[in-house]
Amino acid sequence: MDKVLLVTGGSRGIGAATALLAAQQGYAVAVNYTAHREAADDVVRRIRAGGGKALALQADVAREDQVLAMFAALDTELGRLGALVNNAGVVDVAARVDEISAARLKRIFDINVIGSFLCAREAVRRMSTKHGGSGGAIVNVSSAAARLGSPAQYVDYAASKGAIDSFTIGLAKEVAAEGIRVNAVRPGLIETEIHASGGLPDRVRELEHQVPMQRGGSADEVAQAIVWLLSDAASYTTMSLLEVSGAR
Image: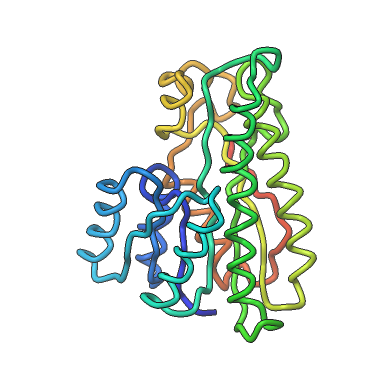
């Protein structure tokens, strides 16, 4: 497999942890970001300081034109893609379904679902043996919310991650004979900035008593699972939804 990796939403949280760990494993890493350029540049700097190869690529994954431009730049700068982590995702403030606007729904699904489809489409066009590629691996970042539902908080986010689970299963079957493995991780309560963006910065601490392991997880712990799924050590693993949730 070509060791060129694209991590969407790679400037912070799980994405940044994945980019850094993958670089340590020998991947050249494209760090995608939408708005946080300084954070993305910092991830790139840290990778290069460790002797790795990386670049930052700005694109809103919900915008097809920007996705196409990002992949074109990746082709030119790093070479043939061998791995994709669909990590870019958003949540909104806690709300019941009867309070959710159509505009909020569109934003959630455009980024979390359509963005993942667009990036996977472009990755398959480069990786698939059907298209002259040499295979590869895709890991979608889902969420334990897909099976928990997140009532009275983020049912829309949970539903978008349920779509990612179905997408993972279908795409895995579709490209299994073309050298591409497709899996997902389903993180539980993880200490990242996404909770603050949803107006609940203390969410992990407030809910960790519900986790059988009695603690929240770290971005690094999720990254370890993602990078394993990308690796040759997972060569017969595809269509898996890997729980990284402390048994919650």
